[in-house]
Image: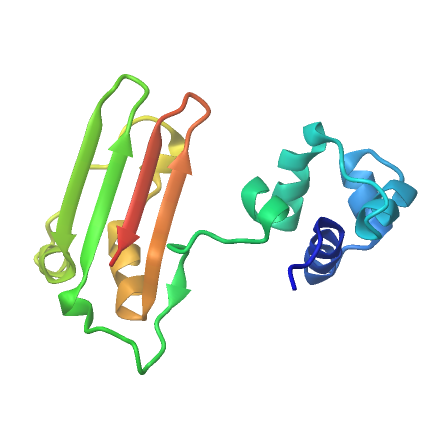
Length: 165
């Protein structure tokens, strides 16, 4: 049986160790409003959903549907773990100017470049993009991280996605 929006809000709130009062204060609503949401008597106003999702650490889609993106970051289990040398790091950049960049790099190639001291150019644009550290991403992959490792969507609409498969 699927859980309701109210049950999802309640569960996520408790996972974040927030009281109804704390959540209400952050959203500038009453604690009674949060209680009514959690008891499925009412639903949050649509204008509150982005902030509510941010506070609860999920996307609006996850908040409403309870479904997470199947390509989310996860750690590979020992019985399903592929050798990192068999993985591909995919970098996808879509700009509002219409530029589309798709790069597929074998993890061993990236590792070899790092070990040789080859530096990669830092992406321009926002501060978020400038702080992407490919070396740390490879380290996460070697430790078992799989799925969408970096996803940046800028206010202007530019989008960067780094995935390992």
